[in-house]
Image (tube, rainbow, N blue to C red; front, side, top):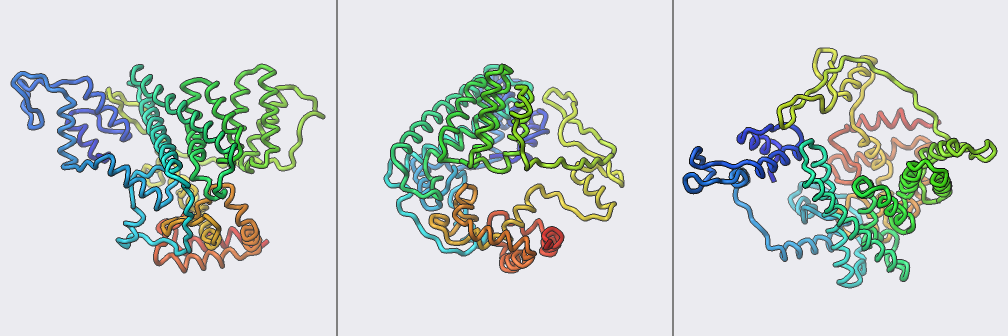
Length: 482
């Protein structure tokens, strides 16, 4: 509940290192609370109460300091909170565990957010009975608990002072979640095989199996690190055995499973990996973005198996290698202090700018290109997503059965699913042809002029990051008709 600044202030009050990530500060505070004690006879403190000479735990003093920062709190009855979460889930059709409830409606009512206006159609039988709703709730709670355990594991393993007991406790918690989720996944898959779902592909995300698949996908690498390659292999094989949920990730599952087979250098395992990669490239569910990596792995396997030239595959769509660009500069190595006060090189690299001002690597690269006459921004992938949202805005919000269930959606429910393209194939293909013919500016200008004033909240929209003229200029030089 405390911010990073409040935690740093708290650490300084009790004379602990107050620098670094928020998770590291919390770990240092909790570690100190478990190991230190305060004698009230020698030190009077407004936060420490007790008889003269009594031993007061440091945890009690830390708790008092925290409560002084937080102030009064209200604890909601767990049964009431469960009811509120259920109402939020049913009304807002949330496909993930929500930490904050009713936020979209509150922001709209307070005129803090404007959503795109579209026609909503409520599907009355998303949850055919109460048992289905409760099972879906359970799947979201398991996913949330698993994510929290994985986050704790990452924070604990990032510190050098982690005890074996703490590590084993967190690892056992993750493995318990893994076994439980895998069992639930198998039950959902068996039930799905026996009876076809009444929901369309757009609404399949409201099936518990969809959530279990997503959870297994996220924890597979961590489970492999904790419990060995066999457990991760079991997860990947279970995911590939079904073709209902998250089929767009099958390419990544194939590649990871092939890598696990390749770790064993025996001919049998290499042939198994070779066969798996071949199946992956022929699988229609393998997305294009996975194929270059699979092709490289296939060539590596053919070389390791020493196949004859006439037995090797040929690919006509190999990616060309990007041109390497090197920018030279003077690097300033940052230093950080651990809990023992020892300095070590850590953090983001810092470079000396033209005026002697320390710059991050991105700002240093922008400064370099500015000297060459270019203008640039460090925006990761936000620019590409914003351009996509502008060019395909009307297609994003077109009427598709099951796509819009509430007036508080930033995108159709199937945007991240395989059905997004198949349900709109004709209009998407037509729009791509129009863009290639030079109409990109027309669509972007129309969407921008309609929604920039109100800052309409939809997926990809970054009104504060890019001005209108910047977007139009980028599109003009990028999508010129050929």
